[in-house]
Length: 192
Image 1 (cartoon, rainbow, N blue to C red):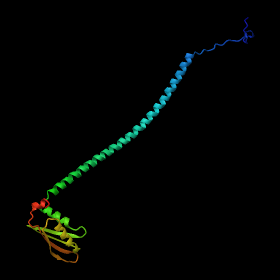
Image 2 (cartoon, helix red, strand yellow; image 1 turned 45 degrees about the horizontal axis):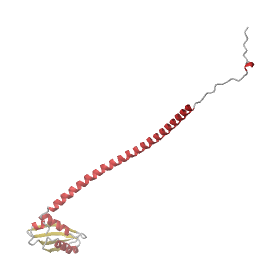
Image 3 (cartoon, helix red, strand yellow; image 1 turned 90 degrees about the vertical axis):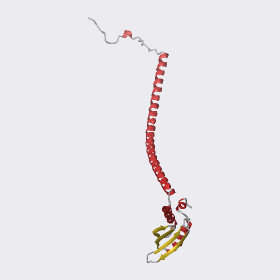
């Protein structure tokens, strides 16, 4: 019969030797370098993520600014077109004004001679040679001397005389006779 002692053998009570792992300095240096590199890589990754996020926010702001500037550019182009249109209209008006002759120049001088602070309506203006008759009505007859003085100052007329004034209920009718003298229409065109 075979006997097996499952209990510990008291005879082998001595110390057992355990294998001690040996750590080399080179291994520790490699581990330290690996930890340092992984830490640097982790920090670098965080920095890059933050920089990407900042750049994305900056890009979004710049895109908004670009859209705003495009809108301003379109508005500026629209105003430039309006400016050119107005300048062309002003040029056309100035050209027409410079090319005024005879009747147009006469009407301009008469209209500019009307006093601004009174009510005066012109009903007719007729020209027969160097004689011009102006007829109209007013509610304030005291402005007629100012009108006559303004006509004389415009330089177109040699004399301006009140031909008739007729008082009525609502307004007074008047007529003036003006003489251009020896001046011909060519002189009026040149502004003399």
